[in-house]
Structure formats: structure tokens, C-alpha cells
Image (cartoon, rainbow, N blue to C red):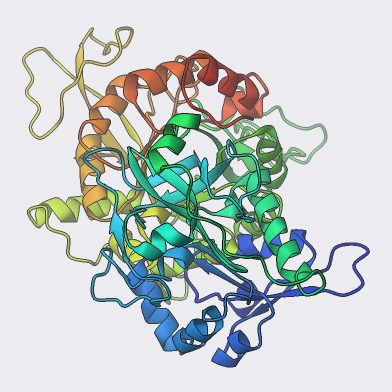
Length: 591
């Protein structure tokens, strides 16, 4: 909605006049978080509606989100490409490009070869090699290779910023790439341009608005330099070329960090309040029955009825999300575990939770639940892309798709493993990029007797302590839908393979058998999936101690690991998990 796109921008306390930033929002992905970061620094925000808005801008911020071709098409539809080129032709005019906002400055991209970039700099954008590492490059990395005279990155070369991209500008992409690169990153031995500066114009491949304190400080430096330059002399000079290589940067601070993700399972309790809950094998109700209240009213004060087990309430979602951000969580996932029963676009309380959380949380937010096409009660059709768009406008960086991914995978295999562009995964990824699409997999073990054969079901021996009801040692992993309530005949590994082929950029891999048990992650499933896909995997279900995270990272090579209940109940702290991971010799962002 227009209200979603135009956010209030108040000034910081004590500021006599607002610092107005012009924001180029072309309607793709989460721009709300950029608004929130600018508001935090006391800026008013004016959005671009016409080319003249760019011509008149004092300071221009371009948060590129999504796929290269879709972004170019939208900019052309808005008629702003020439105005952008005019603005950028004068290096003294302050500019900050973010992520795709850096890539679009070049001539083109292998992501969409037919789409023409702005051509401000010579060179093309290429793809990371997924034979060398998981793609997208997703998580917290450094820009340790820095040029003398740069102003955007600051002085601490060990700071980590949040990257999420499959394509990059290689350091040797062109003379311009090398000349204006002031900060190099490296992923799997592939050095790339992580930050550029030409005069007062800067661009970064990472997301400062999602990079916690380090990113917010970067935004502050850019704004102070941009607005202060008129009072304190000429704009900054273009810095010297890099003094270090990207490979040197990678070895200096260890490269990409393992991520610790906090999950908030959200649903209404029996009184209609939105609460964070946590299940044991997906059962979120308390073990005991609710005792009747005194008097003649058969409804208890918590909204439950006698004999009905109440929904476990572990806190309010916005407050918990803010707490985890402050405690050092690398990402936060808000999962609406009952969304399959309702209308996500009409779920105003959840969208409000997301909006308010994005004002207090400056690390990536994933929202899951109900991303599908459906019909409203009045018969009006709602498309899955519209559901995702509502979540992105409210502050989500990624959407998690569950049951709809199972339907898409079945159709994919029915077409002899051929994508046709119609699934929610494909269409959302085409607009917002693969990095914005997470597939959440909810399997449980399906045990096989000694003489049973599994057709198209990947057989694996689980961890040594797991056995079937009759002592079986072999199992495959059966996908479920509707929050684990319905079993299917689809193997979890085949779902993951299909999800990647259909455009997903990440997998959230759960296991109903280990959920809430505190006995450790399901390593057998995680390792099996990692052998079959090249996109990042978040391990979920079963964490009980910091050691479980260390074991998971070392034995399965997952890029991230998630927990919920142990953090909600303060049984384990995020800092303790990160301390254990770091002590084990693994790279982790400091809590």
C-alpha cells in the first residue's frame, strides 16, 4: 500500500532542521529497513516519484534489492535511468548504493544478460562459482582489504557486514572496478568489490541497514560526510587503489562467519493474542489440561476452556526479537505456524509485528507462513507474489515457504524435473532474487524394516541413538505440510533438490523427531541434504547446548544453525553459543 511505501521520518531529538535524503525505491524487496536506519540518524526521507526528484536531490540513496533484470525493467518503467546517470556524472553529489545498487552501476550482469545496466562504470557482474562454495554468498563477512583515503568503511578492518548475493563484481572485472574499489571481500577464494568510492559517491555490496552496529555506523559516517561537506570544504577526493588483495583480506579475519539464528514461532493463543510459542515435536500446547476457573464461567482468564491444553506462551514477538538483536543474533526468523489456516495479507497483527520489529532490529528478518496463492472468503484471488510483497513492505528481508514448496516440487517431478516458471518459488525469485526465498522443510523419519526397499527415498542411517519402534536402523525423511499435520510421500532430500532448481536461495531444514528434544541436530539429514544441494542450509530442530552448534557446524558443514526454546527460556545464551563456536576454531561474528 501507499502507506507501506511512505514511512514517517522524524528528526532526531534536538535537531533544528531535518537532513533530507532522497530514496530511490523502485518497489522491490525490503526498503523499510533503510528508512528505519535513516530515521535513526535523524533524517527525513523523500521518495523518488519522478526524474526531477533525482535532479533536485541533496543526497541520494539507492537500495537495490532483487534480480538485476527486474530492477532494470522497473527503473526504465519509472523513467529515471537518465536522471540517475546525470546525478552520478558529478562525483561531488553524495550517493550511496546498496547491494544491487552497486551492481547496477556497471554495464550489465550475467544474471540477466539482455538487461543493460547504468554503465556508470565499465565492466560486467559475474556469478560466484557454486562448485567452490554454497551460492548465494550469505552471511557476515569482512572488507579487510581497504584503500588509503576511503571514508565509507571506517578504521576497523575486522568489522563484519551482512552480505547476501549470488553475483559480484570481480576485482579484475575492469579498470574501473579496480580503480574505485576501496574495500575488497573474498568468498571461497574469489575476491570481489565490496565497497566503492568516487568523490562523494559510495556503493557497497553488503547491506549496512542489516549489519547491526557496524552498518549503522557506516550509514552515519556517510550522512555526516554528505551533509557536512558543504560547510567544511570540498568533497572527499577519490582514494588510492587497493593496497591489499581480496585473498589477503579473506585470510586475515577468516572469511564468512557461521550464523546463529533465533526463531520465533508465532501464533494466536486461545484468547486471540499473538504470542511466541515453542513446541515439542511441533506440539505447542502445554502438557497438562487447563484447570477450570472458579465460578460459573467455563472460560479461563487466558481464554482457554476447561480440559483444553493451553498454547505455551514464551513472550511477545517484538520484545523477544529486539532482545535477540541486542544479544547478538545474526538473523531472526518470525514463523507464523498457523498461517496455513488464514489469510496472510489480511493478518494485520502479524504485519504490524513485522513493521515494529524492523524498527528495532537491524539484522536480517525472515518471515514464514502462508506464502501461497489462495482465495479470500469473498472469493477474491490473492497471488503468492502479493503475499510476499506484503511481507517485504512490512520489513522482511526473506520469506520462508513451506507447504507451497512441497506442491511445487511435486509438480516439478511430474514434469520430469523441468521448471515452468509458474510456482511461487520461481516467480518470487524472479522479482526479488533467489536470496529472498527460503524453503522450510518439515520432515519426520519414516522407518524401514530390514527387507523393505525405498523407491526414490534416500535411505540413511540416523545418528546412533535413533532407532525405529521395532529397532529399525534405516529410514528416509518424509515431508509434511500444514505445520507438520499432514504427511506426504515426498522425500525431504528430493524436495531440497527441487527447491534449488526452482529458485530458492536457502533451506531451513527442520526435523520433527528432534524438535524441542534438546538432544542435538539431526546430522544424518543435514549431511545428506548438503551433499545434494549447493545453496546455504540452516540447521534447525534439536539444539540443547552450545556444543550442539559446534558439532553441527563441524560434522555437517551447514552455514547456519537455529534455535528457539533454549533462547526463549534463557537456558542457553547467544553469547555462550558464539563463544563455544569461536573456541572450536570456527569463524563467528562476536555477540
